[in-house]
Image (cartoon, rainbow, N blue to C red; front, side):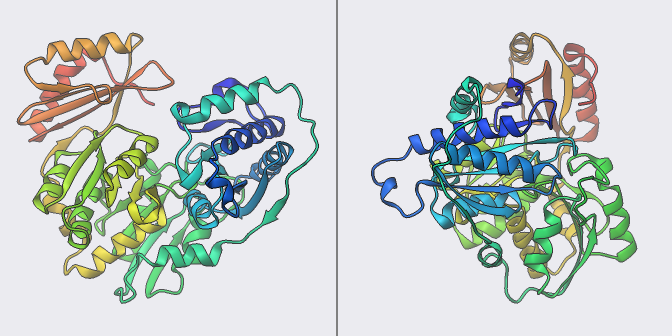
Length: 458
């Protein structure tokens, strides 16, 4: 087991080369030890508190890794509720619905087919990352010298499909108008979840890449524009009202309007701000600091409180809980909901967007058009060895702007701003720039490139 598989927010690596069934057993044992160590006396009085939920995605090696993970958990004395092949948001639902002390989803999300890994959540589906227990799990797992042990725990199989469907459909308007939607499941878990949840509704779904055969027709990462090509062609051909592309484990999505134009996730957050604040006046809404200024402007316009947060689902979920926010959106395609245990959900996001379109008297492109009032670079990567030194240099160079170091360095001016933050794992700086006009954006990018060098593909 390669220690490099332990990342900032999850465990992920090449199957067999970096992670195999032996490693999965050790991670299962360590995870169970860690999660059960957090239980209080009150928690221990709950019915399923000593149990852990385990789910898996559709990758060909996920069943064997899940089996080994469960055996490791049992060897530590933990009971396991095996909820089968599910999308990642369903593990968050399972933990809360069944009242377990945590859960693990076997998945490598948007990575290629040869990868796999584990997303670990604790009590109430709180994320377990490097700062909240993943380092402890790594320490226990790497210290184990064998995978022998008496199985002291039990395994129960539980199919949550109907309960999960009912939970998601709570958020959908029962009187929704007939709509035509193209959905690219990226050969991932949306290929199972979308039909199970939405097929009984007056929505015509054009299915793309719904099959599971252990391969991906295109990389299951909707943030890469090239991966939206088939979806955009289908929208035009079928005259769809909306297009949606999910990632591999269906916790993230990207939407495309009826003109086949990609909708930035920050613009989607801004669009949904009005919708949520009508239902929950004066609420807080959380957004990640790479998002367009339009997000905060729309939240304020409709009477809400904007909460700017650093990048990453662990930080976003904590910010939602801390501020009791009704909703949160991240540029990566994660959208979070107070009424979904402050967790993210691709299926619930689809439900809310369908509600907005159904209520509107205009196509999606017209709803988004007034929000496209700034020009943005998108995330651009630069190879930099001394990341901290460069960020300090940027802060000095642009010292006449308002700056902060919430996540990397952000510098704000009246007509433009930028954020430059470090990669957790590579010698890279990630830059986002936004300006009032396209011309100004180009000028500011050239100015920043004089310090950062030329962008690299990553």
